[in-house]
Image 1 (tube, rainbow, N blue to C red):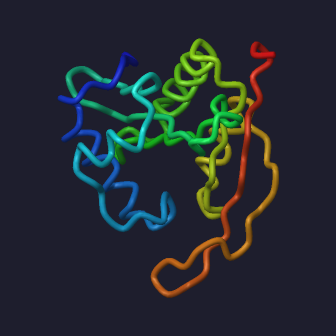
Image 2: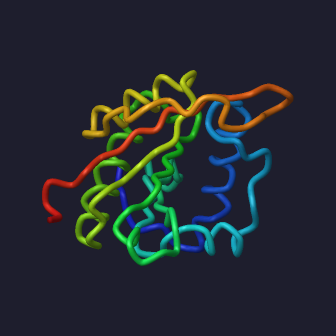
Length: 161
C-alpha cells in the first residue's frame, strides 16, 4: 500500500468511499456526498492523502479548517475514510499517520475529530495516533429523526510551539 497526495483525478474513488461511510450511518451527519467543487472548497489543499492498494484507492484523509478567524489558523478537523473492502488492514492508520506528519509540516498545532460514539473503530484509530477524548457533545445534531452524540477528540502536536 502506498500513501500519496490526493489529486482531483482521485475524486470518483474518494467520493465512492465517502458514500460507503455515509451508508454505515455512523461516519458523518452528511446524507449525500458533494460534487468535487464543493468538497474541494471545504478541505485544505495542503493536507489531503489517499492510500492505494495496487491501482485502487483504499482510503482517504483530509483536513478542514475549523474557522476563518486568524487565531484558529493552526487548528483543523480530520476526516478519514477507508473503503469497506480495506477496513481492518491498517489503511486508516497509515493515512492518519501521514496526515499528522503533513499537518505538522504545515504548522498545525491541533487536530480535532468529531466521531459518533458508536464508531468505536474510528475512535480507536484516532487514539492509537495520539488523539485524546476531550468530551462528548450530547445531542449535537439530529440524524434520521434521532439525536446523535459526538465524541470530540484532539491531538496536540509536540513539535509546534
